[in-house]
Length: 118
Image (cartoon, rainbow, N blue to C red):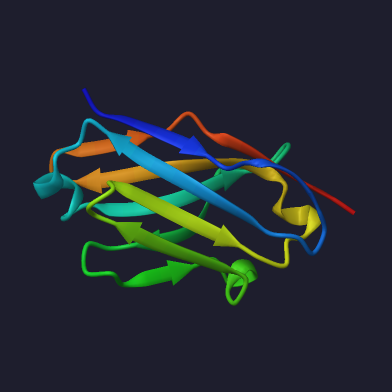
């Protein structure tokens, strides 16, 4: 059984950094290596939105408001996808979710809370 387990959330001051990590526990290498991975977030009273994505070919894409501040990376050997978040702003406060897509799977993690104080 495959589980996506996020970690790394917390409370930081504006201008600070956090690194989120998502581990695809139980996923075999051949599936993880072809998976597109994404980070979404859902702020208080807001809809869930795509923050960053990385394809199996390492092509990345970012929400405009996080470009230059966030970096997504994927490690096939560790079965992880990380989100390095720098220069954090109060508006980045949200629950962050990991999402994996393959031809056979569309799965979400349980989320990790990120809170940025002003």
